[in-house]
Image (cartoon, rainbow, N blue to C red; front, side, top):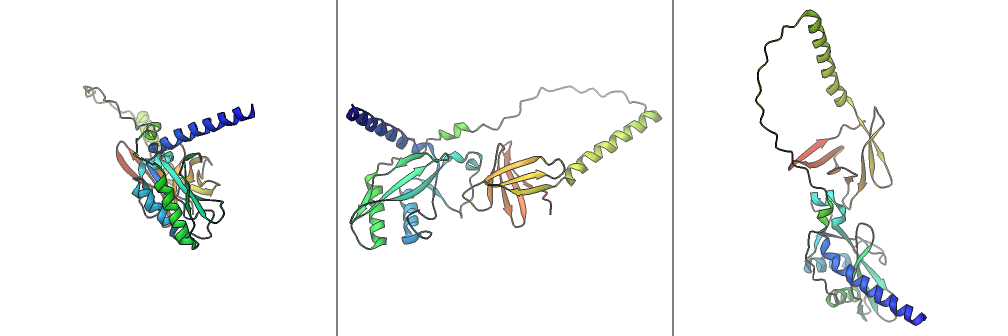
Length: 266
């Protein structure tokens, strides 16, 4: 009975693994970790650089900190896969495996295990990683299916043409004139209050909150990206990033890119 259950679990695991590997085509970008867990420093033995090279060779778009942050990724961070290389325990040989995870930290793809019996670390790791890529069938072609999860920017409806008839001139009496002036003063005070409102920047576990200093309401809540000082706005289009000492919000509205400097309390 236990043998049958074990065989069933193996078949189920193989089925799930096969489904997950085919889904790499749902992801547009890949980010390679700066340091793999089994190494002591960033890009030790140039293993991270080699991973980036081999991913690009297999058709992936690999992002790094020097790239401009794509706007479609700012709107949907689940277009990104995170690439990591793990070391498999083994006697008298070095064994490496490529693992790709999505925005939910779910493993989407695990490569075959590459091996090397070379004794020098750099040569052994390079040989094992190249073999892991060579033995694996990526067949990667981005299918654009993940972008369907993003709500499209609504197109303003076409308004019917209206014929405007000029009204007859209104004679303003003295009491009415006072009321008009009072309303105008209120209208002028509203934008002035909006301009004067400042935002308080408060760091959180995932990024920053931008809080209205008057109402103490969180206007923007953000979380970090793989790029330094670039943050995705939760529940809103676009990104917020730091330019020098200033905070800037950038988003697309009606097909146009809008850059808005935030009024931060000093």
